[in-house]
Length: 388
Image (cartoon, rainbow, N blue to C red; front, side, top):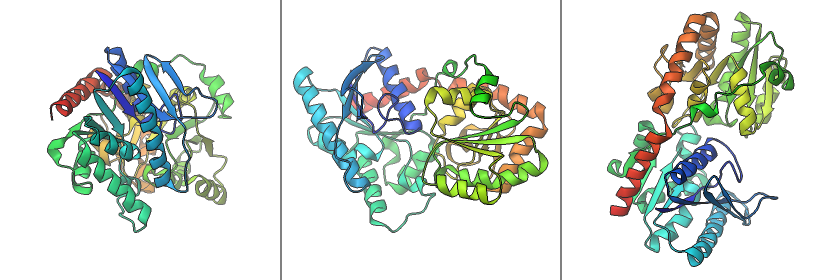
């Protein structure tokens, strides 16, 4: 098939979070199977407008960011439509368009009017990002309207977990029979690398005689970094030889740093900022425990990454994490509050046999989330979209 993928981020344009990793790898896996894949995304200064990487054609779009988030994505969608038009005129029509999240719904709406089959993938919703609150501001409701519109115009919808499927039915009013669960995937071997742990620790100023707890993700309310920070004093009361690493950026960054300074935690907490993908893999391989303290988590790609590297995982009992983690089997499940998170981390630190067991079982669990399985399900969704 000739497939057009629309996403606001990717590893080879502007990379923001897990969506960029999944979109990039998914496009590459489709290309490996002989499909002709074009990825329309954003342009960053210094990048070529067009390139071919790992057999995927990248078209990076330039546009005016506008005055707010809605104008940003409306203008991005227009720029994508312009690029798509040039490709179609130059080399022919696409068989199907696959858009990721509400950011590209304006473009998909226009493409639907032109008669193209549409697949929309929801990796999260604005409802989830705000912790289940509906909010009152106009922008929030406009975003929710676009999310619902995506489900209306799509021939088929995919999402990453049964939890998200239920949320799309309840919040976006998308019929359940229209939604296919297509889980995220990784290639475990990409994370299982040989490296000099001492050198990596030295680079980040991590003493060799401490144990490290890693948080990786956006510093946003949904991801719960504040819950983990509030758990730090309790963990330190029981284990002085522990250092907490926060890798990521977001709107909570300044607030978290202020709180850490106020409670004199800066010697035990390191805010590393945004970490490039390859350096992140290094951090994964040197940490002693990985914690996912999310208030809501549609899937949690970092869970698969932690499993792949044999990290003992402490995760909140929410969303896709709750679906995929079995307590004390392939991870330790806790409630999304500081006391419970602290108890979970301490339990892993104090029970090395448990840490070993959940690590080994995590490595086995990640084998279910292969690209072979995910692409097989995605292609079935494509076929349904073409037939509808």
